[in-house]
Amino acid sequence: MLKEFRKFILRGNVVDLAVAVVVGAAFNSVVQSIVKDFITPLIQGLDRHSADLAKGQWIVAHRFTLAWGDFLNTLISFIVIAGVVFFLVVQPINKLQSLANKGKTPAEPTDRKCPECLSEIPKAAKRCAFCTSKVTPLVKS
Image (cartoon, rainbow, N blue to C red):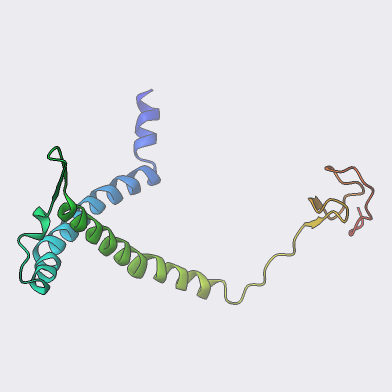
């Protein structure tokens, strides 16, 4: 049982996931700091009458406190993280995949649509599995 556990732990995807979680947490701390220390003061600078933006809140019916300032900071952090992931991870990977697939031709489909019910059936089918109508095979079997 310990050998299986060691094999599981040392599997590549588990180690990769652990590294991704640690790096993601560290990156989140950096982005939170950027938003709190740079972006929020810039937004506050636009409105000379505002107090600390992160402490902005509304008190509803003398009972409930809605912390809109904290929510705004969290929303800005999310947008910054999403932008960094999109522009520094997703876009380059999509570009690399398009360059890798540039010379390749797509594989010929092995299925076709049934003329009666428009379900996907194999090209060699003689009868539709869905509506049971007879169809002419497109490939010789």
